[in-house]
Length: 321
Image 1 (cartoon, rainbow, N blue to C red):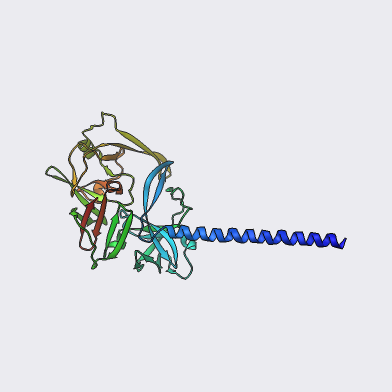
Image 2: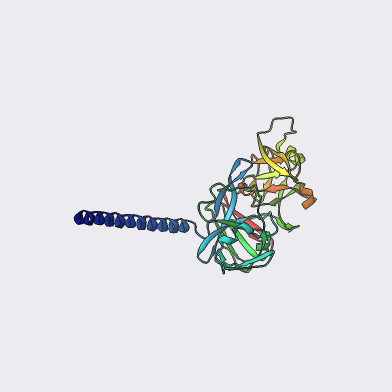
């Protein structure tokens, strides 16, 4: 019997050794894959996420910027339509311990974004119950918050929509840009307003990087004027987004059509560009500023333009391909 037992022990020993080798192999492969995934996202790269609103998948719905905290990469959504920057409370446990200090409502993170030290104090935001989802958010770096207008008030921001690159520098530093044209803009009520021109009339829109999917949104009167559609004609497209307001379910309906006039934003002509309006006119743009006609999103710059904004000196430049 002893020879039989000896053979069994030898067989088990061989199986265990092979099993350990297999486990080690997969652990190593997994580490390599994790490292390669982390390296795929460069710290000056714009990261796009599709956005899901009420079951509707919006391509390039959210513009994300990588931030590095203790050699680990996270994402912050760039949303210049928001006056404040904040970190989601639900994501605090993912940020390396010791890399931040917090009180009840604020947090300071020791990290880096675009080679700048994070000196900003973020607000803490309880995002429990938010209905905005980013498909595939579990793959790649974690989204931990939003970087808003307040972060940039003493800085310059470059967004290259051609090569999907970005850069942030202190206002005293210069960017290299050639063949650029100016876009008139101002900051009012914590909104970045840009001026468009139709004939001899001026129309002000606020530039909202959090509104990537929609190139332009306006009110009903301006929509009818820009599209020559008095709403008796069928709209080119209709988008319906389920929403909840004061615990009441409702449907937000956007109509779109093409602009049939020459409307200029600097050297950019919006003729034939899609423009939307929300049928309930619930955005109330005039509450932000009486002169405000609507919102311009990232889509007007997709694949064609690089923009540079100096928030301190309030200059806005763009250059095309």
